[in-house]
Image 1 (cartoon, rainbow, N blue to C red):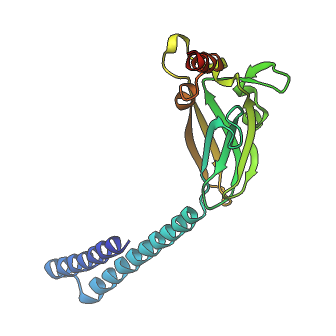
Image 2: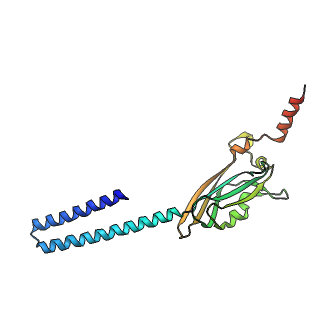
Image 3: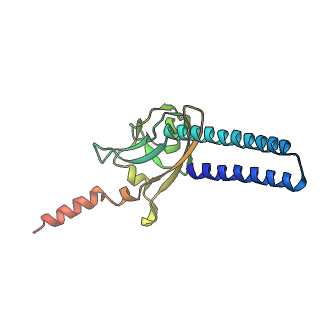
Length: 205
């Protein structure tokens, strides 16, 4: 901002010098030249003030801007339970949070019935409000979650792009994207059958 202020001051001085020089060359009365230079100076100062006001507004907006990040993975208390977590990592509240999925995952309800991640109520209806540092979590599956979403033939791990759109308290609209990546979870924990076979082989004399 200091550099911009110095550039603005240099521009003002340059314009005034040019006007006075032009008036001397053309022969315009000194009173008119001074009046024109004063008018230009006033307009330049007014424009500079508008710039400072706008920069101050942007700085205030940035200091209270929300930020939404969405992750998916094991619950912190149980690796067998997977959940979707929506977090506001910004310094201001997020209003009217909506989501848009590019792709989908298979989830299971409490009764074991399969459904799509996009059918979750929070992703369909969004969140009206999420405070700074606030977090919203919902369970998306149990031990079968990774098996339900494992790619065939050990190919590339399933990943889904989730776009978020939300507003700050002043009405400024923000957008963010989160990759729901399962690669680190798909291969981190071997299936129970593999574990049982390894234990059996180890116990065999």
